[in-house]
Image (tube, rainbow, N blue to C red; front, side, top):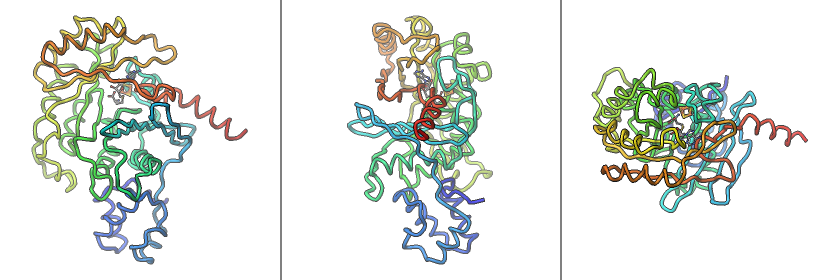
Length: 376
Ligand code: SAH
Ligand code: SF4
């Protein structure tokens, strides 16, 4: 089987090429070729010895996921549909803003968490993405945005807010994070890479120990009764445990000997930001009452945090509607009056279905349509 070099962070790549009899520093050159120059062909890697390139080509390749479609919305948002095989696909969204360019990536095909307001959750879990498939999203976006060769980093921020629960795929997400942060690859700072979770408590601790990047937690309800219903994983990790894990995340991790050198590099570094971002989707008449806002202030009292209020993005048969603008303002003001920072997320890319929770909601249907179009 051909190894996919997109799956490899620096540590693993060094292991692989030293096994092939090459000097360890060549791994850094390879990472640069693959991720900074977007090369998928060993022949172009001219500063590597020809014999080594040939040996490498015998066992490995740079194998990004197949690009099915690229679309650009009228507000500049861009979306790539990448094949995940077997008729499945994942979507990647790029959101350009004045000061930054944010790429929203997926970590799984579907999701097992079954949050009731999320179209990915309705699909169930198909499978985990590999590290190469996660990095392949950034690889494609960089290439399409013309950032290769120039190193001008069109993508300045990455958020794991596409499909899937990243903390249930840490074996692949962590090597992918290493490559995102590696100066020989994408060189993003830890504060510009955000993992978003529905609250998988033990894995929040693992992320903090192995690769503490910025953390967003999808709260969506201020009490266990309502959260049990909206975010079913709350029955396993209720709010009290979740809040404690958030506080721990903001503390520096203890060093343990069991972890790899790459992980040790980040240990004791602590979280890159001194707050947790709490995401809260506002659902009309469900979780948007002033009493919910007051309860939210109380339940998050001991956690340094900011709130990201997300207007619900509807999808067919969701059973929910977006809160009225007045309700959103009132909710934000109550948090503000309590001294909390709360921003309302603007919806972007509406005309290409690129908004949160809509990602890949209709991917199967769309993939089928695409297949029909391309075979016509
Ligand atoms: N599984 C992770 C990350 C992916 S979801 C998590 O849940 O955090 C990214 C964000 O989009 C989460 O906050 C999620 O709750 C939100 N989201 C899901 N469906 C949505 C919808 N229909 N409208 C608005 N936001 C939604
Ligand atoms: Fe999964 Fe996140 Fe959707 Fe919940 S909101 S079902 S955790 S993708």
